[in-house]
Image 1 (cartoon, rainbow, N blue to C red):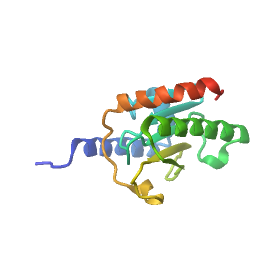
Image 2: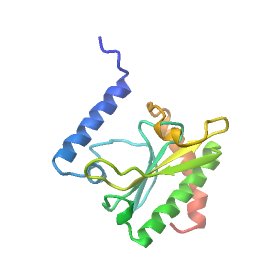
Image 3: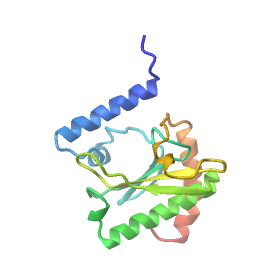
Length: 168
């Protein structure tokens, strides 16, 4: 009898799909952006022609968010100054929305483009009152996303006035 939780089995299958695409020289992020066949239905927070912002399907903490820059760039060093400005401006807006919607005290920002065939994305890790401080938050155990659409809706609601006040 298999005692592995179903979400862990799902995550393992996801990682196998990603690795199979990488072995074929295909960027899994670009493939998913074009087809939706890797991550399927995600809890969307924001999307336009340049960015896709979603809750991590296997978060390390409540509100763990992924900001994907849609044009393919292997890592952050390949961004132009204008691209970096736009990406980090959006990250700032999402950080403020996470703080407002989820009452996070701080939000850590991290990019980890490693492995073969990378695609720039930023991970946002909220920290709440009483949580330990520091980079250990980046390696907390993962779990299944619970109430993803409700949580994304709260963050979208907090993001809306920020986006309306300032152009992205």
